[in-house]
Image (cartoon, rainbow, N blue to C red):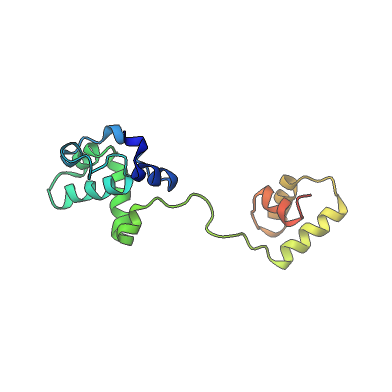
Length: 148
């Protein structure tokens, strides 16, 4: 069973399962399923690009046969061109690294909190943006002030 293989479980844990594995109809995935796994997102992306570059399939046909849209094909191709195989891995969502609040921002938030302790993190974030032009999420403000 596919869901029981160590490969499947490892890819699932890493968030690398193809979201439309059932839509992969490219020949290698049907002819050699033990090696070509339609659930392996990185392998499917690589084979999609190979089908276009090596086999000469159109971008649309290669994308369709591998369970992707034409637009997604071009995103994958661009990522591969920029970063090679690493580009085939999905980027983590969200900010890259922690938010670093300057001393000026922290001083503003702490002073404002002393003046009006009942003001919410969302309100403080809005006031911070209006006063200093620094846009942060309300949770960033709340964390900076110790969760208060």
